[in-house]
Image (cartoon, rainbow, N blue to C red; front, side, top):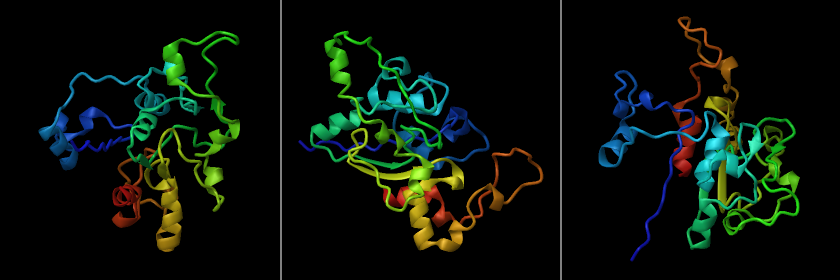
Length: 230
């Protein structure tokens, strides 16, 4: 019997009511609506935490932030965590992460590491031993920093939380960095000069500082790149 493949989409900071399949009268989301039409649509789904990184850690480990340790943005998921990608790889699947990871901090600040859950000298339970491995070096918690990606020689240390391949596109909107920015600078340098809010097309009706219309061509935008790589 042929085993199924798994493709998991994560739309970052996406409100449920900003989808057509959840009744939004303005926003058009035809592809997600089609998935909802032919699959299951939850009306009582609750996140593990209000912000990004803890939820990603919970998706990866099937554990609450209080258990996996990444309880806030800026605190990396411990590299010794056993993830669903680890288990898939161990059972013969090829695993890949394409797009935003944010399992470690992206900001150029000293990375915060989750504290050990057990006091020194305490013997962990069998379930705990199955969920964690040996402690990883602190330097491996700097892999998603923007400053690291400014170095053309920087590469992810693989496997990364169980992913055997990683094509990184971290951050938000057209201010992303990682493999996408390297591709853009190499293939479309004229587009690379137009990224960021300083080059965005402002709408005089709105004054939200984090909202701007990108001037990048559609085929140069991060989501198009992620789709092509996938």
